[in-house]
Amino acid sequence: MHRPPPVHPDRSGLDEGLLAAVAAGDARLTPAQALEIHDRMPLAEIGFWADRRCRTLHGDVLRSYVIDRNINYTNVCTARCTFCAFRRDGDESDAYVLDREVLLGKIAELCSIGGTQILMQGGMHPGLPFSWYVELLAAIAERFPQVHVHAFSPPEFVEFVRFFDPPGATLHEKVRAVMEPLREAGLDSVPGGGGEIFADAVRRKIGLGKCTAEEWLTVMRVAHELGMNTSATMMFGHIEGIADRIHHLELVRRWQDRDLADFARDGGGSCKAFIAWPFQRENTPLGRVPEWGRGEGDDPDAPFPGDVVARLDGSGSKDAHPLFGRRVRMAGSTTYLRTQALSRLYLDNVWSIGSSWVTMGPHVGQVGLRFGANDMGSVMMEENVVSSAGTTYCLNEPTLCRLIRDAGFVPAQRNNEYDLIKVHDGPESPDLRITDWSSLRAQRLHQQANRETEPPAGAKVELTVSEAQAVGPA
Image (cartoon, rainbow, N blue to C red; front, side, top):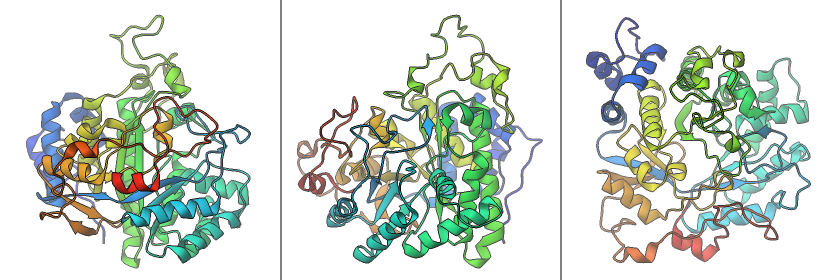
């Protein structure tokens, strides 16, 4: 029986006794305590407590990564997210749907370099029939039974319900009617894409046409009920307030408590990992919004509009500030590390915290291993969404292992269940075999694009099979 640790709302979030209990798993933070920690605790100190909590869960020695490939099967999407540079309406020259054999070829490339998993997501394409998804999953399962399929984020499932009108009286029943045949065809787990920020005022501004927080969480509850694991995400550093970030963490934790209580005894799944990253502004509509303090009439000494609107219970109203949604507050490396550390302290019922080197760069990602993260995510073989917004980092497996080792840990390859496949503690480890690091300079990252068009600014494209083998797996 899942029993959440107790809260102590009468204690300050800065109380060392409370923090020691949180790190040990014997207490949990309240939203107000989390806000106090975020606003008042020095960066090094919040890193210390997050690292201590991480070591309680994951020990002092190993930190992990996965070999997978991020496959975006289409960029056609019905949503109008203002933070996205990837989506297309469908009539543009660079709109695409991957041919099945092309997609299967991508998986074959992954397997040839030791990959174990694909992360497969797309835009929400209104023209693809349900059979397209079922047959694709069946083809993957038949040809690559060893590959774990981590696919279709909650917004996609909500659109599946809208597109295909499955039977059911509630959203839960309708999602289950869609998810069950996909699971039977070969879906193994559900990724946490589309989380963004759950607070309604923010979500309505930045995620036009995308599912609500309640819908997102309902999809994940259905996945857990069916025995599948999931992940959760948060994209921050745009129009939201700090309280919105904490409310987001609170909803992840609250629904995880509920799902563990309801399904764990019967073999149900759970949210295994949480990953947060800052908004990348290049090439996006939201990126054209002025930074707070730089717009006409801004008073940089006044509270940020998002903080005026935000409430810890998510009830903030967009009408609380006339510039809400019209100014952004970008998040740099220190804000990222603070946010990641807070997520590790707050999400006591989520096993893994991932470090987002893909958006923050390899060395900030490395520092993240001392700010509560136990996992460095994937060696990047292909990436499309973040690259479309102008941010492209590419690491090979030896370099990723070296980053983990130089942070003071032993690198270990994992699978989607966070079971360890290989512990790199000997001389044959990928990084320890390298004698000339100059030969491992960053290679080009594959990005799916129409070759007759120019790639997005800042993106690096087209990784051949031979280059993929040299670079290392996703």
